[in-house]
Image (cartoon, rainbow, N blue to C red):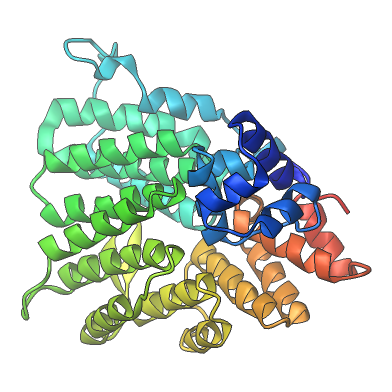
Length: 394
């Protein structure tokens, strides 16, 4: 793991490589020269997502490259990330090429059972298991899709979608985009429009991580508009629509735009359902989903009072594993902005307890711990423990 000064060094390296002065970069990014100078000199160890997006775009680089995001599986890996890459980029997908598999296909029912387990592993933050098993699952699902047709669309599309989601966490955003595109293309060959529309949410999430905020928002909004439910629509239809609205909310907040309309519409949909409703094995929607995303949006927009008020609408146990962990990071962000560092540390510890592997891959966790460390003359044992978990320099 890079130390806390990596961000500043990376900004300086890219700036010099582009032939930019600090003043020129500040002008391009719409930031003050003072912020850039402090980051490069290590006097400021972290930056907000909105700031990082501006810097990445001004430096013509991937957001993940700027912040040094990457594979932090460490010794807990059971398989290789390259195997998952190879499954996504298999030459057998080229026209008129044989994939070399001539065995009996796995039944769609058996594949769907495995998909359910893979989704459970994803939400528990078990990335090593997913990296190990997804390549084989994708290969099996391809063979079954080729043999039986539409009956295997769901497991293959979901396997691709899970691969895309894992690749985002591992900092491989280009591969994530390929996985998301393959998931959408596979679903397009089936007869479930809701599945096809819902999978665009993952693609939007990938675009967000690529700092393509306008495209991320527009993609999610266009899909939500396409499947906008009628009054008598089934619960899952309403849930799919609401989930896409919440997906659009995140890039809108990162761009500094007003998110009130998204929250109002999604709240109306959640109230119509009354309780959490599963969309597919990998996602659900309900009142807690809205409160969680509202917390995130207000935390990103640096409105801590609104973020903490939204967080109070979430009941314990309503969120699944890493969703709860991500929510704790947003609550920690709000506490840091309110200068309640002790409360922020507690929330960070709760997030880490969900899944240490997942926690290591969260850029915001690194940023928050670095910010708290900057504010403390002598880091507390709890802060030292968090820094050790993230391999940050003391």
